[in-house]
Amino acid sequence: MNRRSTLLIPLLLIASLLPAQTDSTFQISPRQPWTDTGLDLQSGEVLQISAAVAVSSVPDPHSMPGTPACDPKGVTGTPSSQDLLLPSAPAGALIARLHAQGAAPLLVGDQGELHIEEPSHLFLGINTGGGGICQGAFEVKVHRVLPETVATKAAEGLTPAPANGQQTATSSSGTTETEKSRGQQLKSQLANAAQVFMAGQFGINKNDSGPGSATSNATTSGGSDSVPTPAVALNVSQALLDSELRKQLDSLPRRVNDQFQNLGDMVNFVIVGSQKDVQAALDAASWHVADIGNSNAVVNAVLQTYEKKDYLTMPMSTLYLFGRKQDFGYELAEPIAMVASRHHFRIWKAPFTWKGSEVWVGAGTHDIGFAKDKRNGNMTHKIDPAVDGERDNIGSSLQKANKTKTLSYYLPSNPVQEAKNATGDGYRSDGRLLVIFVQ
Image (cartoon, rainbow, N blue to C red; front, side):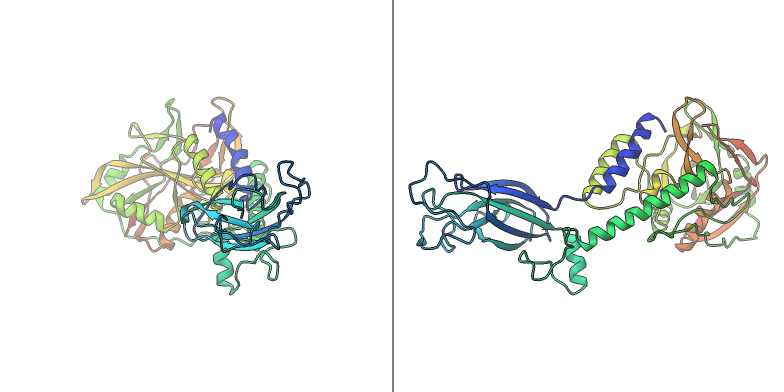
C-alpha cells in the first residue's frame, strides 16, 4: 500500500461517518417568483416543511404603504386572484414546485408534507402575482425523510412524521431512529476495527490459530461485543486426487511475486470450475471484488456513503503469477473494520485445465493491521502469519454457501512452510494446498 492508499484510510473513515444531509433552511422572499433550493430529491422521499415569518425580515422600501406582512398561511383579507401563481391557494402563502413533476405549484402553508414519487428538484415561492400583495420573507425549514427511513417506518406500521409534530419520527435532536441505529453500528464497527488493529500490532487479545487451524478471524457484526468466530469446520474428502491433477499441482509456482520480482505470499488454494461458476460461488459466499485503484476507491466510497451503504471494496495491490497480474482480487470484511482487517485473496487462471474445467490458482491472507513496508518504508497492511487460517476460511465460506462439490488437501512437492511476503513480514504454513471443486 503506497502513501496515497495510506492517506485514503482516514478519508474513508471520515466519509463513512458523515451523516447524509437531511435538514436545510431557506429564506424565501416575494421579490422573486421562485427560489431554487438546490435540493435534488429521490423517489420515495418525504419532505416535511415548516415556515415562519423571518425574524430578520424588514419592510420592503419598494412596497406601497400599508402593504401587509407576508404570512406562510396566507394574507387574510386579500381576495384570491387568477394572477396568483396558485389561484386556488391563499394569497401570500408558501408554495412549492417540483420541477420533474411539472410546473403546477403545490400549497405548503406554514406546515406541509410532500411525498416524492419520482426524481425531482425543489423550488419554493410565495403565492403572489408579481407584486404588491405582501412584504417580508419566510424562514423555511425542510426536513428530508430518506427512502430507507420511510420503508423502515412503513414496515413498523408507522408513517413518516408530519411537520406539525403530532407524530414524530425523529428524536428531540432531530435524529431519526434509522440514523441513530446507523451511528451505533458505525461505533461498533470502529470498535471492532480498533480491536483488530491492536491485536495485529501488539498481540492484544489475539488468538493465534497456528498452522493447519481451520479457524477464521472473521468477526460477527451487529454489536459492540462482537468477537472472533470460528469458520465452519471443513468437510474434506479423503479420496486421492486424480494423478494428472496432482502432476499439474506439483508444477505450480509456490509463491507469487511483486513488480520488483520479490517473492511474496504463498499459493495456498486452487479452485476448479468455470469463471462463471467460480464468480457465482464467491458472490454467494459474500466475497466482494476489490477495486483496482485508488481513484475508483475514492469515487465508490463517496457514492456509497451518499447512498448510506458500506464501502467493502478497498483497493488491493497488484501481485504476479505466471508472469502476469492477478485476474481477480476478492475481499471479505465487516464494514469500516476493513481499513484495519480484511480477509482477501487473489486468483489467477492457470495455464492448464482439468477434464475440460478451468483451474484458478489463489493466494489468500488475512490483514490484521498495519506495518512498515520493508521495501520502501511506507505503511502497508500486516498479515496474520498463520496463513493456513485464511486458506481454510476461503474454503469454509464457499462450503457454507453450498457452492462446493468437494474439498481436498494436497501436499505438493517442495511445499512452502515458512517464508516472508514481499513487504518483509514472515508467515508459516503446513504447506498444503486446499483444492476446491465448485458447484
